[in-house]
Length: 587
Image 1 (cartoon, rainbow, N blue to C red):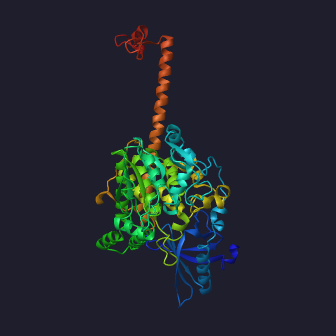
Image 2 (image 1 turned 120 degrees about the horizontal axis):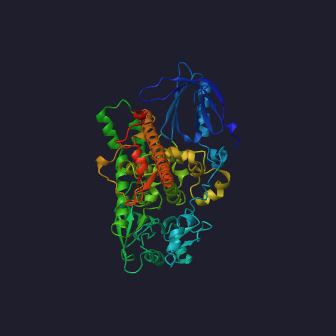
Image 3 (image 1 turned 90 degrees about the vertical axis):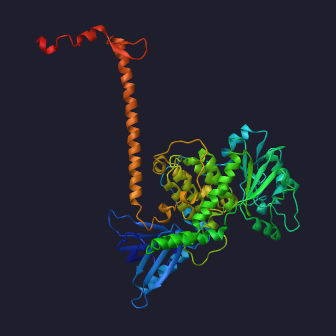
């Protein structure tokens, strides 16, 4: 495909740029607009004035407001990161050309024509982000320490058993690959139960998709054998189903279903419903509409926030994750989590449970590993889910959903309640949100590992982790108040404990610079404290060396009672005795 065929007007001067809904209001500014293959550039062409480079993939909607009297009109560019930019264009032909070009470029379907395949990093890559968090690396300690219980399986090396699973999975050692293949036919999409986390007490967290019982309530002994192998004889486990009981029962008529207790006697089932994809997207749409309505009264704002139900989704998700964490930690029971497909709500709960339980997931590298392991490698289809967002009025489909954003919001809620227990600051969560929708990196491309291998992302694109883990970049996302906490942290899900993530949802509406300046001030104080502590340590070391030298020269003598304190010698003390005449009196 040739991009120039889609660009009807590559450059236009005299475009008036507005930022509607911004409080306090900002005056429109005149800019030059340049449209290139992957970006829309707004520039003042003045020294010292920053240009705005907007990826076409970030554009969610282009709203046309023609001016039938004067000609031309306004284009309202609504982005997936919730930014809204209004462009006033004088000429009718240019108005239509610009609108058409942006619409076409923002909807290019072939991933090979997206920006990550054209981006070339200008920095030295210190770490290969494509190989840093492979399953063999992440689970090596567990498989080595418990070699009699767990093993790596490469049954899915050709992605034929489960198209959305990675090539390497961790399964009970007593289960052979033939059993896994049969069990996969009994789970939707082939997503048979696999290990995703071992808690320090010895309980295990697994995930899968729903069993395919169907209307005839068929069973699969291989699936039963696989699950029972996790528990061992005489032990019990929990199955957390993220659907309502009614929905799970109705799924049987469509070929799905749930684990029947008669066939899984060692497992108890509990339903902790989390709303489905289209409900989440509708909820987010209502939330952002409320955030952009700056003329609302207090009562109307609170009413619209409540009616969006977004905070209810946050509460329900955290509540479900806490139930899973409690089973693993307090009761020492292994847990299997699944919904229908074993994707959205399943990955949401298993990843949040690990944030609650595992202190490593509250570090920068731990969060990166969690996102890679529980979302990217687990087959969460980012391009499908994020092709459209809350501003899109056309082109939405049942595959669009802000599930990953809901995960980040829940992490942010826990971060607010335990601000010193996370190595990273909230801007890192916002960074992940932005790059999951549009990015110069290939990390979030591909709906599953099979697609990423087919696209050759590791060879043709740069990794976000390689960029983020550079020391100069990483420093800006560290939490200055971090104090490592190796304990389990239990978030409150009471309504008064949860709050709107204003740093994200209101960042294009309310000026966030005061909060940013406050964070920078805290970071500066922390850095100053670090330098002072370093100087104090160095001075103590120098003092100890001087004392040692003084003792060796006989100026000081070692105090044998403490073996460390030094006292003046007799001759030295007499020289400065209060009863001795001062040097001046002897002149």
